[in-house]
Amino acid sequence: MTSIGDSFAWPFQDPAWPGKILIQGPIALIPIIGWIATSGWLLITIDHYRAGRKELAPYGFHLQRGIWIFLVYLIYPIAFALPGAVISGLGGATDIDALQGLGALVNFVLRLLLFFLAPAITIFTYRNGISGGFDLNGIWTMSSSSPSISVLAGLMILVSGLISVGGAFLRGVGLIFTVPHGFAIGAGVVTRYEKAAGTPSLPAQPGTAG
Image 1 (cartoon, rainbow, N blue to C red):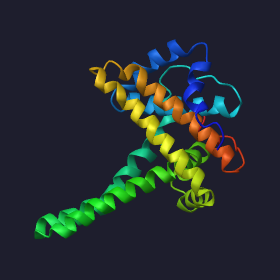
Image 2 (cartoon, helix red, strand yellow):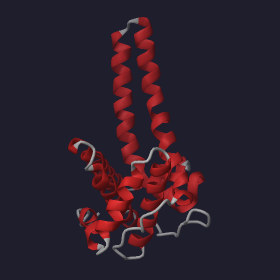
Image 3 (cartoon, rainbow, N blue to C red):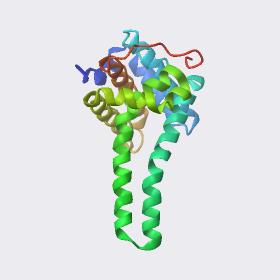
Image 4 (cartoon, rainbow, N blue to C red):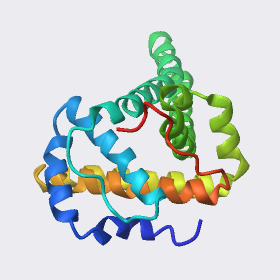
């Protein structure tokens, strides 16, 4: 994946970025509705990046576009957290420290695996909606076919997530900027990942665009 650092600068190549980010920011902070809307904003930004336009999505409540990827990323973390939680719970119930330690280790490993899969999960959801988001065979095939690229892209998504929540250290006010900026970085990372992974840049399927 060449020049992946460009993904961090892409949002600022849109002359209208201040207005788009500073208005989408407060929307993103609205529980549930705002999170869905900003998930849609992410996918529309991917539309633009894949078309070769360094333009952020227009700000707004992109609910129809964002609902499926929001649900996908709601379900995956819960599913990946369950095995470790069950093992740790058994350890707590039986006072077996080794089981609690094993549960923590399983949880850590599965979190890393989720970041490894995240770029492909996003692309499959982008292309085919919720059914694509749970196409486990296709997601694993894409991720494992170029493991080094998947690891790098997953790390960059982790960084974009840290940027998103970084505004909380400024008494929360900074979240208005950092949340949409982090989403925009993620859009750039996923766009580059799709090309670097050597998969066809298929359009979003009918019903996933908005």
